[in-house]
Each structure stands twice: as C-alpha cells, then as structure tokens.
Length: 230
Image (cartoon, rainbow, N blue to C red; front, side, top):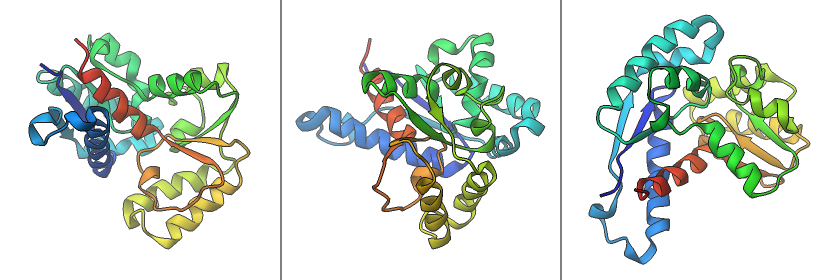
C-alpha cells in the first residue's frame, strides 16, 4: 500500500493547490502507462490554516506562527505517513518539528534544494524567496546552505518581498507582477535560480534567459517517489 501524503498550507492557500496539482502531474509522469485513472492517484491530505499567513512577517510573529504550525503538524500527522509545508519560509521550523517528534515524517525544502544542487553538480545558484528567506539569518531555512555553498540572493529584498504580496493580491497573470518579476530576474548573475517561495511559480512569465527551478515541483516529485517506498 502506498504511503499517505500530507500538505500543510495557508501561506498562501494557492500554494497548497499548486503543490497538489504538481503531485498529480508527477504521479502520472512516474507511473507512465501504468496510470489508469483515479485509483492510481496518491492519497493526499491538505490542511489549510489561514493564520500561517503571519509568516510573511516572521520576525515579528515567530512564536505565534509556531503555535499555529505545531497544532497543524500534530493534527496532520495523525493521518499521514509523511508531510510537507507548502511555504518555504515556514520550513525554518524544521528543528522544532524534530523536537516534537515528527522529523521522521517531514520533508523540507532545504532537503530537495540540496539534493538538486548535488545531483546537477551546480557550483553557484540564486535563491529567490520572501524577506525572512533572503536575509539568510536565523529565520531562513537556507541559512546553512548559504554558509557552505555559493548562493546569490537578489539585491533588492524589499522589491522581491512586495512582489510576493502582489502575487497574493493580484494573481500571477497580472502584467505588473510579471514585469516586476522579469526585472528582478534580469538583475541576477546566476544561471540557475531557485524559486523558493510558493507564490513565485504562480507568475505567468515567459522568461527563459536563465533556468528557473521550481522548488514546489522538486517537492512534488520527491513526495511521489517517497510514497512508493516501503
């Protein structure tokens, strides 16, 4: 029997929907001709908690967000074999998740980004995310990677942070959103860019000068593969 997948979302809720769709896509891609319909889809539980949206200002709301996330982790782990958090910023709580006894069920964004770097022998890459991620301090899940690998971050943190808010408000098809995103991408030197915020892959850009690596897609693929492991 396949393992059950859990998704904690809410920051923002569209990120959970996006991840679920990508899980379904990766499931079909993996099964190929062995996929015959609904019965071959993975078992997925989604828990969407609006209060997790406070993560956009994590430094001010660290304890409040953890209280909410802790309750969500404890709830979803009652019915799944492993889970992810559809928000790169919230993955910074990995150590706290370990402390409450659920690290063995948790797959983090740091895990899949490190795996991608190693598997593709990258020497340098850029990470784009929300302000707590970009600052590469205690509130960034990628802090340890930044200290050991050649990681570039965009120069204008505030512009990137505002872009994420604009995606939430106006959607990924907004011309303003697309133009601002393309402007940010043009300022980056690295050829490989990790979209380490779940709102960024929702932007309908046609930008192809550099390789945009969707961390959500990396998570989806790893979840599907893991669901088949005994």
